[in-house]
Picture 1: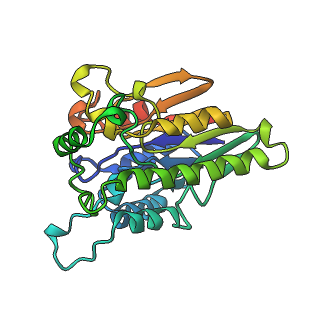
Picture 2 (picture 1 turned 135 degrees about the vertical axis):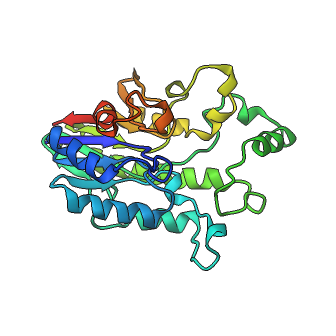
Length: 280
C-alpha cells in the first residue's frame, strides 16, 4: 500500500493553479492507494470538504484528511448572511466526515497503523512563554493575534490551550487503543497532524522566536515518545523539513504559498517534490 501525505495547499491563495487536475495526475504518477491532506487546504471546513469530494470524483486514489487551522477559521464579514460556526463545530464537522476523515478511518495495514486528528497551539514551543508574567503575556499575544479565530480570547484567554488539550486527549486515546490491542506493542505507528510537535521543525533564527509559539505544541512529541510512535507527518510552517528525535521521524509536507515554490509555474512538479510517500 502506498500512502501520500501533503499539507498547506492554500488553494484560495494559490488561485492561478488547477489543483484538481494536478493532484489527480500526481496520485496517478506516484501510484498512490491513499492520499492524506494534512490541513490548510482551503479556508473554512465546508469549502475544504467540498474540494475533497470533487477530488475523489477525479481519482481512484482514496482521499482522506485531517483539519488544519484554516479549516477552522470563520470570516463572516464578507457575507453577513452566511452561518458562521465556531472552531469547535468546524473541527467536529471535519473529524466526523464519514467519507474523508482519517480520524474516523484509521488505516491498519500489515504492521502499520496510520492515524490522524486535530492539532492546535498552546505556546509551549516558545521557550520563555511559561515564565512570562501576566502583563508580558498580554503584550506578547497582542503582537501576535490569532485574529481570524472566531472566539474572542478576551472572553476566554485560555481558548487555545483548551483546543490543544482536547486534541492531545483524542491523540492519546488513539495511541492507547493501538498499544492495548492484541500484539499492539508490535505495531509501527504513523501519526498525521497539522501543527508542529517540535520547535526544531521551525526556523532557528531569533527573528522568529515569537511566532514559534503559534506553531504547535511540544506535548505532541512527548506523547509520541511515550507511545513509541515511529513517524509523524506535519505541516503548518510552510517549511519542508525532516529530522529524527527520540526514535520518531518527523516529516513536514507543506506545499505553501506559490512564491516560495521551487517550480513556481509547474504545480505538478511541485506536488511531486512535496508529497511524502509511505510504502507499507
